[in-house]
Image (tube, rainbow, N blue to C red; front, side, top):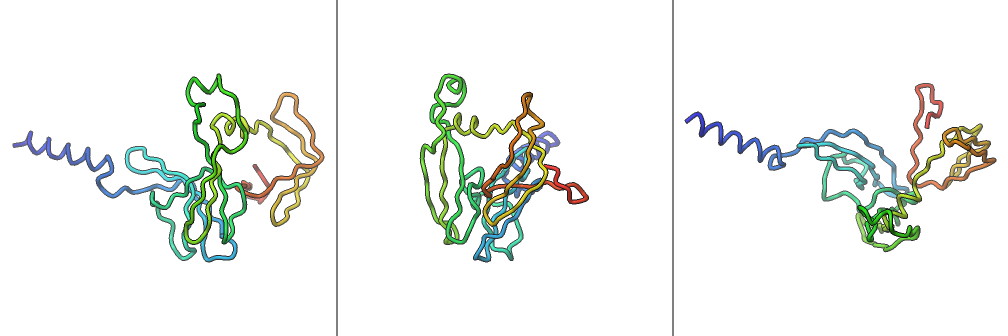
Length: 196
């Protein structure tokens, strides 16, 4: 009798742990940005649940809705490439296109989108530009880390002035660097000084 009860409980726990019960999600990253001209917001998130399940990405919700993890609402891209507005949200992702695994080292890098997909979500057009994995990974290495003297912000860009590369072996100096706004995060220290 005890063995049967043990077997039944073990099977129940295995199925429950594999997602047959309701998964409780722990949100470890959550950023929110209002979508201009609407009552909608776009969230960037990372959540952990179940047995090491990790969900990450973007979701659009109404501003009165509390954020709750929902696989069905995850948008089909890895990062934003433009400032979201009420008409359009543009993002990018990558796919192998023959460049995953060992083929990565023998393939040619392509830096242009391989495919563009469009769909509507909450009456907003989503444009998803899909890049070749190798081209995407080589283009986004970003090994430089700059310190700068000042910055200026406009509606669609950030301008940095007097930049010194403090990461590279042969660091370079830039008079000015313009970064178009899309998916940009600024980390601040406790005294509101820019950290990263």
